[in-house]
Image 1 (cartoon, rainbow, N blue to C red):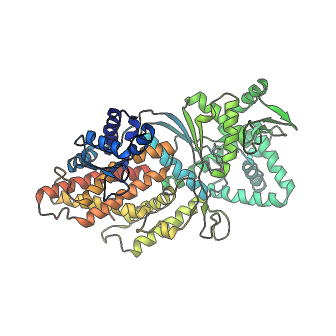
Image 2: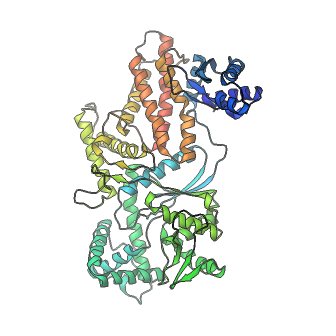
Image 3: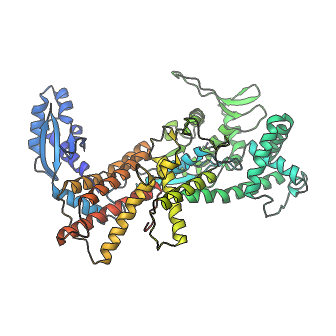
Length: 589
Ligand code: ARG
């Protein structure tokens, strides 16, 4: 469905073309001065420069040519040659009516160039606790997968777990110290091993910090873990069986944390799943002379002429012959190219790993798997505490994702109780559910509303507030529309033809009309905050409309039916918009 901005753009493009000018000058956007115009076109100024003509004269010519066409009510020339456009009330009414009945897209449209995409996000590590950075990749990645799918892209998401590194060695050795009698530690045994895991997730979160603390002060202890991981990587059966248990137990726990946040993945693969490709991959790269030996290690030089900073080489194998973080990412690319032939691969990973991805992407192109420009690192900024430093627990450690969601849940419940928000007839189960939805909305929106690449300050008190630019505020407005519409239906008030008469109604429909563009830009820039901004504006325009008008209590029956229909249009788009952000509004609060 074409939104008004598009329709106007097409009309203005034809206008410029008819005047012998570049049709691209007809670009139309929302006006930044809503009291003067709904939309604006600044093409006359650029056109004047190119054609060496007077801009006001061009503007006059264009205004005359387009007036009366399509949704245009009036075109006025301002200043040196700006074109200020008003659209008709009718066009706005039609727009709102179309959004109301478009239950699939709420006024947005599928893209013309759908792509096959791999979306790599989440990146949780087995046993190692997740930190706030893992919250960011989870909600940004999940929102992107929702938006891209909604717009028609074919997305396969993969959590790409960290399940192959030294932490596995720590777990193995620490478990061996605690339970040396387990069959996994018998080097001669090749299986079968028990199906029941010897550890729980609590064991894992205890064993890992225990071992890594010991290894810090004791190089011998560290060596043992290195040895264990090397043997695991080399295929020692008992260790492989343990690895699988560790991974299974971790995934089960992760699904709970991610479930709370509404985050999902198609594939639960990890570094270990790239491992079977590594031996052949390395041999092939060596055989083609693309890697070179360097002090016992194998590297792929990735620096280029014209580089403005240092590019250390890509590490294929270290001097002990072991594969590295680089290696597993390259092998994963090979696997994905062969399995999915994606147009592009997107990685939602902390900005601080930028160099890693530059090296991997360059290497992937050098070895001929995929060209670098089809690989995107979507970096994000750091979550800081109120002291401006990376966010830590009170005790100073990084916070686990589970602890974080629990804190958010407590704070959300506190806010709900304090505000006396829930009506008395809401029972304990529904209350608990509402608390969860509020906490999820708080965490997700607080993160997503920031430009992806900037840092933000973690402040639960602010995030969970029902006032301000917050998730709970959005839920509050969404619930308000739901109850209003439910009540109207109960009272037999039906929707009718939409009429646009007041400023608040105009503003509301113009906001609704911006959904399509906001989504396109969210996709083009891979920036969820653009969608968040739109949804927040919609909630605010609705609040203003709600404050300015009677709806179900309006005496004029036609007007009442029109406003109910308008509320339905808003509800439709707001629910879809919230769903794309991964936020669900309760039925009532
Ligand atoms: N496990 C890594 C970490 O916690 C993130 C993995 C990101 N994805 C990737 N393909 N390297 O830092």
